[in-house]
Amino acid sequence: MGYLALYRKYRPNTFEGLIGQEHVVKTLVNQITSGRLGHAYLFTGTRGTGKTSAAKIFAKAINCLDNKNGSPCGKCASCLAISDPANIDIIEIDAASNNGVNEIRELRENVQFPPVSCKYKVYIVDEVHMLTGAAFNALLKTLEEPPKHAVFILATTEVHKIPATILSRCMRFDFKLIPDGQIASLIEKIYDEQGKKYQKEAVMAIAKAGEGSIRDALSIADIALSFSDGVLTYDDVMNILGSSNAQSLYEFIESIISGNTGAVLQTIDTLCSLGKSIGVLIKDITSIIRDIIVVKTCNNANEILALPNEKFEILKNLSQNASEQRLIRILEIFAESESLLRYSNHARIVFETASIKATKPESDYDIDALLARITKLENDIKNNVVTEVKQVIVEKPIVNESVKPQIKEEVKVKEEKLSISSISESDLKGRLLLNLRKIGSEMLWNLIQGVEIKVVGNILTIIAFNNGDHELLDRATTRDTIEQAMKEFNPFELQVELDEKEKTLDAVDEEAKRLKNIFGDDIVIIN
Image 1: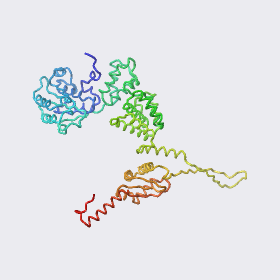
Image 2: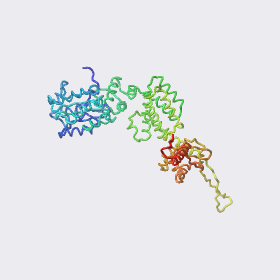
Image 3: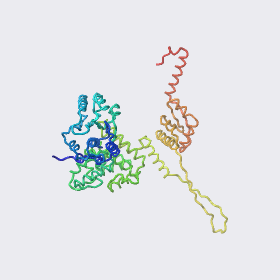
Image 4: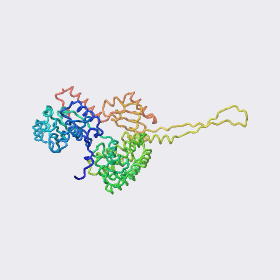
């Protein structure tokens, strides 16, 4: 026999080998040991989390003549019979290629026949969501009242596509993503058996690339096993995954944080000229930004990230040059661009637009971007306060003419207030929203979101687009709250107006009402 892939070679044969799904294993083992077996089970979860493996182990365990703590012994006559490829009591059906009503009708006819060498006849239907509507209808009655010797195990990655009538007839088990640490431990065990030397950071990188799927991680580990004869390093894994040069990406992110648009576009041109995929580039950037946020917010960041020390220090330095709000907004921008790639024929333009937007927070009106800008502005104002030095003569009795009156210097700090006309209307609205949130006025914060702000000289005009908002904004208490939120500005005049279009519509409604009162509703028709 030829080479066997790692994910097939190390597929678990007992419940003890099924890692990361303790909640499923415990329930199934208790059902086996107590004899309270169901007739239909639904295993759902993302790919590579052990659904099919659990189904095979369960099918063998319920037929085992001498199970060990709920797991099949693998030695009894029943276990040996099931291990035979010619066994007809454990039937695996691929619903992706056998999804028609005729295949299900054939299943309904065959299920009536008792098992040949086992206690139960088990049907494992993989990717069951691929069945057609007619096939699901044909399966309904069999699932509801199957023969006593039949057990159905349905496995799917898209449970939302299964009809509710099928779901209600099954015991549902949700398989969760496997933690990176458990996947890494499994890979280390396999590499030790294979005699492969490795760095722990390299194994953790493989585990993270699996994104919770053991099969995906083992497929990458299989490639890494043959990548080099020496020690498997972190950089080797990055090359296998097709990731961009880490140093280039670090410099790229540093340029974004510092606002150097020219350097950002130059790096993009260099990376694209090397044939790097835009999708992979964006994925790598979002991953690094996420790591920087972890470094900035967590005390045990390196325990979470498991990066080489030199790379961790680079991330630490980058985290010190940006606020949390700025990093979060950069992450959001690139995450949004990743989804936009699916609908665009110009991937590079999408990437460049996102990069420029992340570089220039002053052109971004998102609330996190505004928070970052206001924080920077507050720091600038704080660092450039105007001070006045005033001399105060303290009179004291002159005991000796040689003693001069003592002079004490008093430093009076004077903070300069801003004028409402000194910043743009969009920035003014953003600052008003921020201050309303700070003082806890959530209702008014929501209200201000849907209005327009105009500034002419020293007059601040708030324009409402419906009568209800206009009435609320024009109240004395609301005006007081707005003025409180804008106390960092010089005194100004506040006006609240209704949008001209809304006024016109109100006038039309009044005129229509007047005409209907004169001529009657059945005669007057408003177009």
